[in-house]
Image 1 (cartoon, one colour):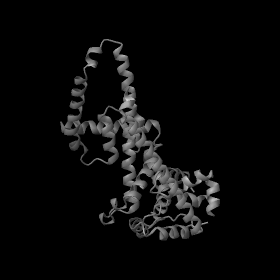
Image 2 (image 1 turned 90 degrees about the horizontal axis):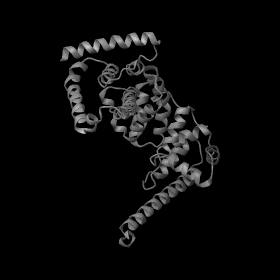
Image 3 (image 1 turned 180 degrees about the horizontal axis):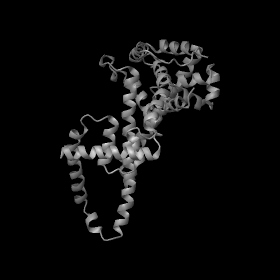
Image 4 (image 1 turned 60 degrees about the horizontal axis):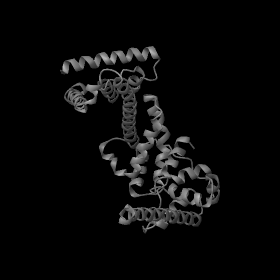
Length: 205
Length: 118
């Protein structure tokens, strides 16, 4: 049996593994995955509490294996830090995609209901829907940069969800890493953050 | 060995960048389970997970033999057995790819056949 996977504690060890990856050492991809996968999933899960943490960590590791030069040690981040940042970005994208999918399903159901009622004419005009979508998108593009200045990545994700109409406390809490809190504290923290962001939006208008 | 690493190794089996793709094809061709493949290679199951996540040696590259030797040395397996397994897996992969291409060409030819339109 071979040696057990090495835990790369120092940035020098991490840099050496990255150099082997760039040089095309055939064993380096396996060692990278063994050294970082579980660690990344644990870190992501502590903050985001999502079933998608494993997929996001896997995506980040696979992306680095395929394109090792995407990490540039000269930029000052450790390999572990870079992988975490990349995996968290992948996770937030997956969460957004999942949310959009959920909303689309909900929207389809609502649309079906409306068609049975008195709104057929309005909903049958795709141009109206496009105009509404355009208005929302313009408002987002104009307001978001001013509102986002100085916010953490989690708060920005929270804000984006809020702007898209997300109202469920659990999802908003997960976006900014509050899933670990008890429900009542989660609700209070989500309300505080909502109020803070609403004030920022008002000021930016 | 973590279940997450096993999942990632399963994902690597679908990608010819990884050795896992060719090992899986070879095992499938022989009707072997992962345990039987590990036994044929002379390694422990947990090392097979790592082997599947190694970069596949490129048969066209002058580094091919050196890469096979490097992997074999890292996991203490016989380089000749690994070489034979990799070559068989790569042959099966190319046969599969050639088969798909031929099927694609045939169906394109059928679509273009004017007599079939009637």
